[in-house]
Each structure stands twice: as C-alpha cells, then as structure tokens.
Length: 453
Image (cartoon, rainbow, N blue to C red; front, side, top):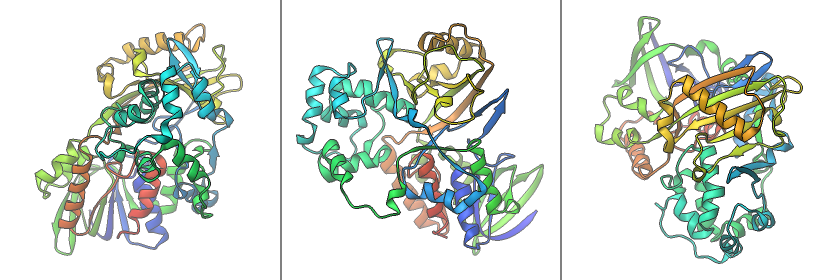
C-alpha cells in the first residue's frame, strides 16, 4: 500500500484520537497509524456478567476547559458522566484502619493522620518562604512546607493513586506544575488557593470544574465517538514496525499491516506514542537526543477488577481507599467504582479495582496471576471485610508501561524534544512524554497538536 497525505498521526490513544478529531473538524488531510487492531490505547471498556469496567484509566478530572469542550464538540455522540457525591470522600489507611482524608484546614487539624507537630506546621504554611530549587522533588517540597506526616499520610498515598510513583523521585515542577506555580506565584499553597478562589475567571475557565468524570456506558464510548467523528477511513490499524525517515518535502513512513508492507509520504508527522517506542521509530535522530527520552521511567502496575453481585463488606461510601507506602501492604489502594458511577454493577452489588505494583514494588509485577490473586484475596478481605472472597468477576490486567514518571531526567528530556523538533522541521513529538498524564492533559495536548500543523 502506498499513500500520500499532508499529516500522519502515530498512535490512536486519547491524544492521537483528539488530534485526529480536531484535524478532521478543520478539514485537514491526515492519516492515523495505530499498532493495535483497535483504537483507544489503554482505554478499553469491558462488559461481563452485568458489570461494566475499564481495563485502563477509570476516571478523569475536568482540569481544563478542553476536557469539557470535547464533549460539547461531540454533541450527542457520547455523554459526559460526572461522578456522584461519594467522590468527595476518600480514605487513607493508617495502622490497618481507614481514616477519612482531610478535605480542608479544619479537618486537617482534627485528623489522626498527622502528628501534632505537623498540624502546627500546616497552620504556619502560609508564612514560610517559597522554594528556590526548580529541581526539588515533591517529597522535599512537602516536608519543607507541611511536615513528614503530611508527606507520609496525604501526599504519598495521593502519589500512589495518581502516578503509582515515589514522591522522592518525582520533580514538582514537571509532575505537578500547578502546585509548583502555586508556591512560586503566591508563596503558599493555602494562601495561594484562597486567593485563586477570588480571582475572576472567564466563562471558558469556569468549565474546568475539577470534577471527576467518566462517560455514560464507559470510556470506550468517548474514544469510539472520536474515531467515528474523525473518520474511520482515515485510520490504518495493525500498523506494525513503523519507521520514519526524512525525505523530500517531508517524511516517508514504512511498516507492515496485516503482513503487507505499507509506505506513506507526509509533509508532517505527529507522534503520540510512549518514549520507549521512539528510538526504533526515529532511526535518523541523534542517539544522544533520544537517550533522555528513553531514560524516562514507567510504573509497572497490575489492576485487579472485582465484581460482586451481592456486597456484604464495608460500606462503599467514597471514592476509594489509598494505602501509604509506610503501611507496608502489598496493594496500592482500592477504588470503589460502583459508588461513583452509574450502571457499573448490578443493584445491590459492587465493583472495585485493586492496584498492585508501582515504582517501589516492581517485584510484585513479576508475580504470576495465581500469586496476584492470592495477594489480592488476602489484602481485599482484610481491608474491605467482604466475608468470603468469592467475586463474580475477577480480572487481572497488567500494564508494563502504565504511567510515565516525570523525574530527574525531565528538564533534559524536554530540552531534547525541543532540539529534535527544531532540527527536523515538520516532526512533532506528543503523547504523555510531556504535558501531563491525566485524561484532561491528553485532550488538551491533542487539541493543541492539531493546530501546530
């Protein structure tokens, strides 16, 4: 197969699909190459025995206007679902007992999660000096401003829930730029948050409600809607071993699809794949420039999906429970999905996800499925008190490259991306190698990428 197009997008995950959707709306000539036989990347909704669950990310956050606007632009093709009010209640495990996570200054002072010393530190946080090290890890920033127990029982479990990572290895400026800018701009987390509440917001900015969201019927309804709206005939699935080479007027892409070679010539190329795939895909790029990207670490995570037709355990009245690394458990946390979203479990039943592994427990990723089931059964029974461990659905899903970690290589990585793009005009490197890991981040970047070509 040979084809000539103006733009090629590599990857049909959420970033690539969003890029394609907005390219289509602007009547651009493009083709999307996807290695798998389906679109959506890690987003994949499954239905089994009356349960609806995700095999990838379970929810997103409306952290920017673009995430809200994509549903407006798709109109009735899929419907946004905002998580129920249970989402505001989250649990943290301490000494084997679930404690409600503080959601404000008063509850932070009353909670048993933090030491008395650190409660005074929290009250004094607005009066501390701002940091001066742009390469400061998150753990250093939190200890400096809030104290050790706040790091151990608020930030560490939060990091396990978002990055499955280690706050000592994540750099605040890159992993949590909004938090970094809050301190740099206002000098304080608490004071800055209060001031931002009273700042005037445009009508567009108000769309970033920070609410947790999914899609009615599952997230695959979003990716499939984007695929349909962008034009299914503009996607080449099962495109394996894609290699990009500069050629006259742009780039030539070659690879295999269903056992046959394909050749595509394009003026511009947008990649949205993981950093680990770029070396073989871009053989013409200086190895010294690719190296910082290949150094980026990815958390290895296992998700165990548990569905119970009849639930007899502890009340599922929150978002879920997070487990600090200090508690020395073999799971990262439990997500109470049926308490958040409609139609995820039969009436009277429950749907939960248990997460295992992460950056600090890669040893668990090497366990067999039988060993993982034993671990999950033991931990879930102890933590959630279901009585007998007899789920009607039990699914183990492994992610070798679950979540990129924005660590010590971040500045060098971003500089390398800028150099590669300046040296090779028409090549744009996107995806979660930069600009954030959340669904809203991917949507925002995808929309932006469609304007850069």
